Image 1 (cartoon, rainbow, N blue to C red):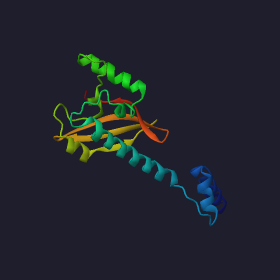
Image 2 (cartoon, one colour; image 1 turned 45 degrees about the vertical axis):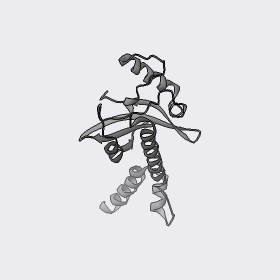
Image 3 (cartoon, rainbow, N blue to C red; image 1 turned 180 degrees about the vertical axis):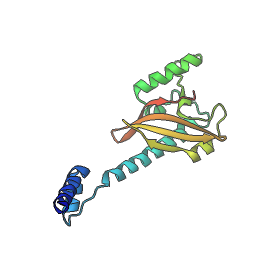
Image 4 (cartoon, rainbow, N blue to C red; image 1 turned 135 degrees about the vertical axis):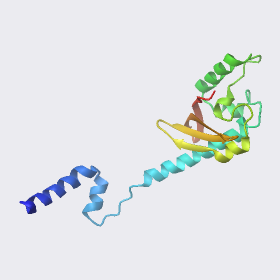
Length: 166
């Protein structure tokens, strides 16, 4: 009885356990199968997104630059995000020229952040649906926010930001 049940159990485990055609092929013969290729691509995309966000912070956000009406800055933002940032700005400040944006939502660090420390400790990890969890430290305080970044016409575009610290 054991001699009959053992091969049947092994066959069932192999058949229902993996559920993957590639894994079944890899187990059935000397085929060369590459399974982790998609993960490597995702890691490369994450590195690209991290570099984009780091450059975005350096170029536009950190250092107190006045970027509200800068067309190069705005080219990195979706129209819906520009509207959201403007509404947030208006809720806290007078907007005399109509171009104010709540750019502080893209960073942590409170009112007097340590820009160099934020860039050095910047971490960007993928979440779901093009959302990324961004972590950075400034003056010993670790901040976490979420940004939604999509690739459109071979360029990255920020489409949303959620920062619970602001």
